[in-house]
Length: 285
Length: 297
Image (cartoon, rainbow over all chains, first blue to last red; front, side, top):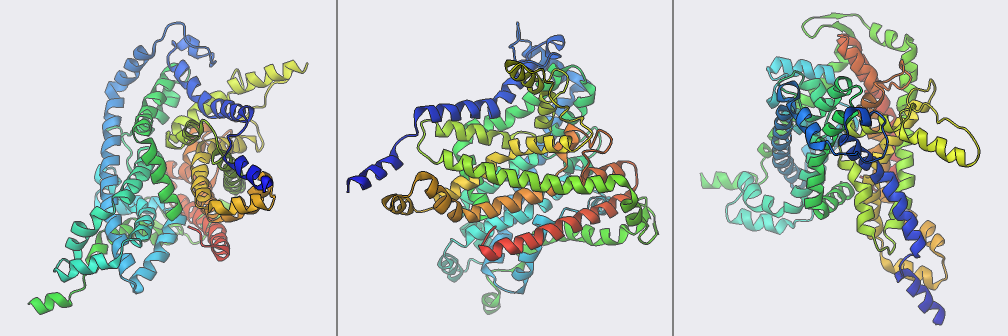
């Protein structure tokens, strides 16, 4: 009897302090130290940053470096920020709308189409896209090197994952809700957008967050499908700066810091939602 | 009119239309035509049928063998290590700690950061001449009376560059894997642990006999997702070494990009088909095997 009490207690007791401190030190030095390295070196002048060490700068040049990076190459970074935001916002918007409708029909209509669709979804999750032929198709359609084309690609590539998550979540919404609406004459597009879509809020947020992170940080697809200086995105600028700022690490790191700022702000604001969204998406997915 | 409306399905296929059009035009169609264009010499305007010449060319080059090998190594190492590290991290982070929230956030944050940015950052940390990691190695080995210069992480002529990049990939991606595991562990009924504790099972025993088997669905998701991601990986490798030195750290995806920028569109498409076959051959059987054992994904 007394034995049992002790074991119960053990489960509810905190880990010993030294274990926790060790864990904390390891976590900080492995996962946060690289970011500290980034910040201090972004704050130095070129000479000091060349030493690539962890000492904080004697006087912080962060704002100055930021101005230099921002104005460089005719305000390229500003254009890139705009392009990245447009690409991300439109892609995520259309992805969430289209994937939700698709998941709804695929879940409610158990026919041959939905069986074929599940195979296609799995295929799309695994198989890498055929890149050059896609460029060829985009050229035929006259949307190669355009933002329209890029957004369509992002939606098409994101569909499989998003539809899967939506479909699983819609399984938890009782069919009686549809039936009540159908009796009242609300069917099809109305049924989905008036009745079902509002109920999908949690999963819409989850998909939105996952897709935002993926599309904002996407380097490869814009590299292939959206080349050209006018269309440059933030990830592209970063890559170009590797050769442009070959030895001026302070500017290179300032640019990384600037790009990292967006996920950081999002993370601080929506920490709980992001973690919940990611988990929901991944487990159900 | 009204009777006709009643006959109409409440779930019209027209809702599938946008997704179907995008999928077919931008994913399915290119995949199908890639099978044909991989057999051609192709300028995007004109093509000339050359049979299996592209594949012959591809397989006769030494860099393909290396790229092949690297792709598989990268996929296995990243997904394997992520699974192993994540289960320990997750089990640590689900135990009772005072700073759980902080540690979870710190481990998870890198997954949200730009891959290219992370690549650049670590390229400098791993810099063989005065990079912090090698300087640390020199200092620490100095304490033991040794004079060691750290290895040339990204410039070594053997397997080290691809393994270094894989390590950075693990650093960046282990947060998601851990999060999945945490969710999996949270779904395990607490009574099981209590019952095991009554029977006198140690913490270690509980971990191996309850946590690991019952978090298996999460494990399968992690394996499949990170294995697929690892085999298709391009951006981190491209940012850190560009496939170099030479083609020591090339993978199939980076070889294809090089062919593409050189204007060998037929060859690049053939490479795409090869990647496609490699990924399918490895992943679909694994998927079937895993989902037979338990429903994953």
